Length: 258
Length: 212
Ligand SMILES: Nc1ncnc2c1ncn2[C@@H]1O[C@H](COP(=O)(O)OP(=O)(O)OP(=O)(O)O)[C@@H](O)[C@H]1O
Ligand SMILES: [Mg+2]
Image 1: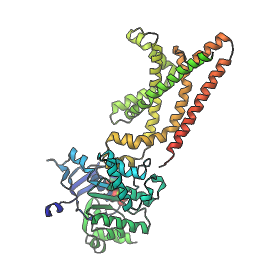
Image 2 (image 1 turned 45 degrees about the vertical axis):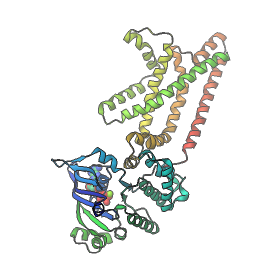
Image 3 (image 1 turned 60 degrees about the vertical axis):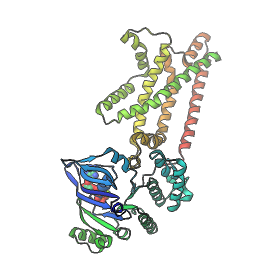
Image 4 (image 1 turned 180 degrees about the horizontal axis):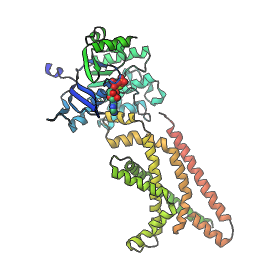
């Protein structure tokens, strides 16, 4: 029991990534425990998106020890190059979900189809079961009456909630948000905070990339501050935001205030 | 007169529908070759498309028609002209359709592929469930133009002696010394195109339930 809960939902250790000569991730390590909300903040170009893309397998680490729970996605060989296991890569899509910055909903599918298609087609689950679950998800994100609309008929905030439901329908252990609140007004940001905290209290690991320090502080348990491809500082949300220890974090936060 | 034109029309429709049946799916295959990460495949399909679009369909039809005899020394039966005609039409229209598919596929935002990949869709599932349906909506007008052109291009089958509607009407004009068969044939081509345009606009409306 203690052993199982001590296993991070996602773990990245000693991750490196370059584009050509440019080193973008430089020995980055990050873990998210079940039920924990971790935000990644940092200046533009720090490597947040790159880290997120690698963690969602849209891109690959050059080197890393990377796993979802007990599922090893990649580990370094003797030369230190990341070797991805095909099974780990395949199975990882059942372990995480992501809400993209611009949602990337499937415009030709209804809200319901957006949520149910992958569980049915990819996971091979029965349509009845998946649709019943989707209706519960829609209720949780307050979209019940929009099930049969297509995404273009919904507002941005509603589309984002469809994207959340779509990710959750795969029953992941980890859910990522890319710029969770950049397009939302204060009311929707508050809703978002509630939804994320609710997910975490149900044991979901949540990873967030954001530019909004206020939101990060409110919603996160832990914050990792990324600077030039390194995690410059990491700790409890309030500490990193209110009492940063690293001079780079201090400078970044004082600039962010004006 | 009407029965002859009607028989010709049936042949024209046969050329038309067999061509579409062959080139609409083949166009997708060639478009993928054109977008392949494998350079030789990309170059071969590019060359094929370039040659087909740069030479007359009638010449292509003759090439297919005479190829078995002059290249392989095979004597072909009387039925071959129809087969040669269909093959040439399919080869020709596949090239045009492939270019339309390619532009449609390239116009798709990367985010759609990424969303599908993250959800674990395989490459073929991504293409057939997510990409192709949206591509069809985007390319429908361009495909419509080609399909309308094909209606009229079927008359080129005349050149290898396939007795389609234009062939029949020309024979009738010669034997009966009147323009009427041409006028009837023209009317039939026109109505056929109108019918197709109607179907296309219906299809466009049906796909108009969303925009992106
Ligand atoms: N595909 C790529 N090819 C080459 N360089 C890239 C690529 N993607 C990102 N980079 C570079 O990697 C660095 C990190 O970029 P990344 O997008 O991860 O930063 P970020 O922290 O997300 O910044 P922002 O806050 O502006 O979104 C930048 O210098 C960027 O120019
Ligand atoms: Mg970014």
